[in-house]
Image (cartoon, rainbow, N blue to C red):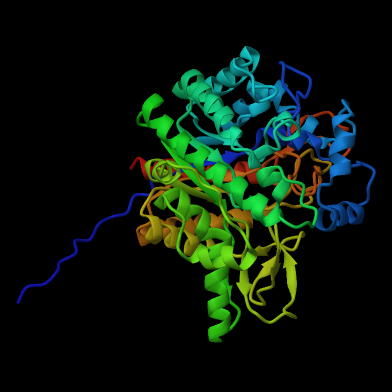
Length: 495
């Protein structure tokens, strides 16, 4: 009687280990190189605020029209941390040298659309912006570091919002196609992997970041969000389609902020809630990007919230033609799902979430769940069958520069050790893992709270919430730990 015979096969951990930042959180250079003002440049923080005031602003007071109006009239950097960043714009060569010392195999950063097209609707690009990114990426390649470039990391020229209404306007597709064509033709040879959009599901949970909509409670906000998303889906498809033509052989992917979700109990109602939370918050976005069409389960949801997506002839075909070549995600926490309204809540990336009693939390209340990373990797592998990149993962913490001129951060080492261990287990499960890029590999301005006090990096930057400091870079204890881990990983890969 016949049967199946599975040969034993040794699994090679050939994925790349790296780090990630975003241009808006790192570069600075607000007035340099012909850069135009961007949507992230409009976000306000008073460096003298207390931690409580900062957290209240972050959690309870989303971006407003009054803030946008004031920011447009203010050309200074004093109250706008994302205009300052960590001055990566002027330090990138020494910073890349540090990343090379770390042994990084891949570096993820984003390109500022407003540095290439200051207003976003110009016919010709800003040559100084192209020269900057070309030199940056060439520097990476010279050190043997591959480049993963994000085209839109929450950040577009603010002129596209004030003059056109932002992503609600289908005309932005035309401007984006011009932008992405420039990226491929002028920078395509020095970039290895492309991501059109960072955390595309942020549109729903953080509208100013995701689709440049001011999230004031109003009728029609959901309609505006999902119509804007439709235009972003089409832009992603164009990026994939043009990529095949202009940079053949290079992978173009899609990314979400991953909210790994468990049912709070074994009640059928909690399991149904977990299923629907996953669909509406995560799978919908990747289903469109990777499967090339709107999933049927969204029909019920759109009917429930009164949304009707306006499409035009050719949209459905374009989504099919522009299916992504890999899937990527950020992973910081997991959550539980229940329809019990009084369940305890805690903070998470972009959202408030329900607390899992079996997990500890970070200083900011984000639930720490290394096993959830392995679960997500398996879920994505099973659902899409595509290469996977963990595009963000890391621990935000208060770090103290000590008298011996370093940062002792055993909490970060423990976090990284626990999460990186799950990568190898997932690969042994059969997951096609392409790369892991630790978030905030060098300290940057945090996106949510807009502070330097919430630090993710293995490299300390001497700068405070008000922008004061020497900008000196200091290797933390975690720098040496991650350096040794990468070296051992490389050695195992090449055995």
